[in-house]
View (tube, one colour):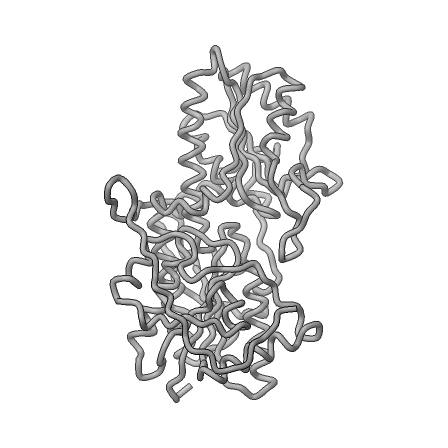
Length: 419
């Protein structure tokens, strides 16, 4: 696009320790191209900000505040779990987006999220084309689940993997020191609905002599085999650590942790696999246990974020703007791995048509034959992604995180009701 237009950026779905680094990449890069990009407007609470015309003027933020986003967890502009339906089912919402973009001279759409966001970004691109409105839609990848296709890894995952590996190691040391007279099994539940990438990170502690059992969503739960292995570890080592993915399920497909409710995306609401597994061990084997659910802690832990992850998150935000300026549309910047050792990668590009609604699962050769551990091939994949530390500054013992002013842009259109 030759003429100067504004850009819209929004964060979607579950936030991460590094999604704001991608925001910084988008905003700082856009500021370097003032001849092509006017203002960067951010959606307050994700795509809802566009639908309700609740836009944030990022030009009101200082350069130092935007730079500080690189060290701040969560979503600086607010995120949401709101999935736009198909174009046929709810065309009015998509047309509303275009109306808002027209009203505010927005020619660039940067949507920072996971699989559902990629789908939305693709649909918006299709609609703008059919309506004859010039809009370049670029998806900025983000998901701790690491389940987007084509890209080698997803920003947010490396930091969660590092947190889970470190926490599993530290808790295992605790259990090991007390197992002769106290707790013998520690169970930690991590996120991962359908893909076991996060749970796999707990397997890295095996190299430190920790007996660990992992329960993946990709492997149907076999209670008998699981209990036999846990008991073997306890008898051999005196203790055992279990890392269970929230998406662990029985052979019939039912989740160990399903609560019966569903979230805004229609996904089963999970949470509670750890106590289910821990009590199973107690009743069948009689071993004393403790359990924990990492929950928000794993994705909010910016203080121990992976330096590799932070760097990639920023670079993908930066690349999104560069791709848009080169005229690309309906694409997503990707991480393309060149080698494991030394770790090398390049930033590539994938069409959204091949990304939307596609999940990437753990390859079977990343999981041991018994289904309860990770292979050396998986370890070679994981290790580079958790490398390096990039801590925020600390003051009075706490990390220094930025809170933006988030100044609203004056509305130009009639109010819009969300049905």
